[in-house]
Length: 538
Image (cartoon, rainbow, N blue to C red; front, side, top):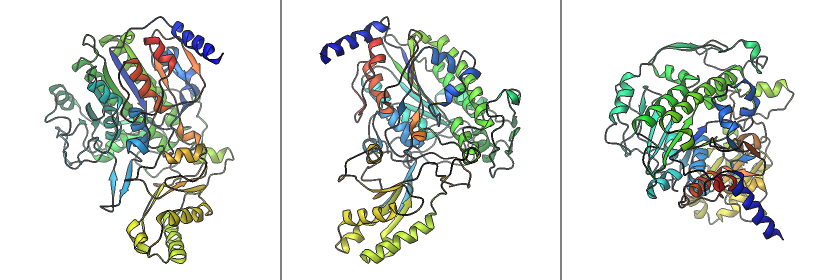
């Protein structure tokens, strides 16, 4: 009987829409730090052409989460791009500790490449490439299947590179010098249109003012979030000054102008590269907007700043969608909107609502505690602890072996001791093999990549402030629901808007798009095609 029901359900999917032609263009929009509820919170304030256009033509998966524990930008973008998780694609964090060099490694670091200079280059920046991403991406598979071409654009290098994959082309904003750049991994020289764009880009000082009367904002009475950058301003107006100094570009990244520049460049790329114009082909354009993240870290998602930025991003999206419609036709385009992670509410906002915030871990004190435990219980020297790089703790395996100790025993004993410490919800010895996996431990296990992961994984309590840059800095990176919850919209003008509440995951995105394009999945993909989307095209 259940098989008959399944058949009828599938036929229902098939009849839900008129069959839609294969898209000529896939546009993947990733909004950095856009928690899954934020679009809906501000929906009534948006105009019709941006977020509301997307929502009105969306198959909206309203219960979507990242399946991994370390909800950071590089890991999240890599998961979206590959349909996999860090234990398989290898990107476990924005940076990680390397045991061999005993140094930190940035996720997109590639010192064998160079950044191509622009007219704005004054201070050299290190080379970048996807060499640390060990699984293929959707964009790679589009190119390998000879379906079309692929590009990634973002303010952040790690966002653009992960979306572009190994075979595509990536451009990102030079937050040190200005202009959009790439590395010798992708090009020996810039295409002429990029040269022209950079030549015509002239950074200018400006003030970021509220775009509406203050009484029109939901967050008008939210507590002011204090930070250390007095020049930028604690409240409106915020000052983006000292162009083209690096401090200018730092301030620029925390304003709506950041996403406007990203969209302008992406629109130029769309036009100049003639994406979506080849007969029988499907091109890919991944665009990651970084402003929500930078502003969210500085002020929190419940601030006036975050709200005004979302209203401005709505306008930016409307212009982008109009450009896509003009160049390719929205009817020829499949748009996907998601995020790389969510975010917690800011400490001042939580405090105003009587929600207890746990103080961040004191790393020096933890180092001393770990060394004491290892010496007292196993007579291991201080250097056995190689690094604490939250959420990972790295131990020296050679030293442990030299003392004729079992690594697994030392790891489990230390994890047990740390779990009893205040400020730590749970410490796991990696990999997790000897317990029944609940949802939390399963998330942690997706973070175990032997070459890069530490020996122990630390879980903070809910609402713990990381406090890395200031006591009040808003953070993400935990496995808790507020950090893993993201929007997931598949958008086409022929889609009838519907909201689906069954559990879905960001790992489902790439397999869904692969199924739509009738090609193989990315190499390490673990997600499943979403039938509501696939049935509309096949």
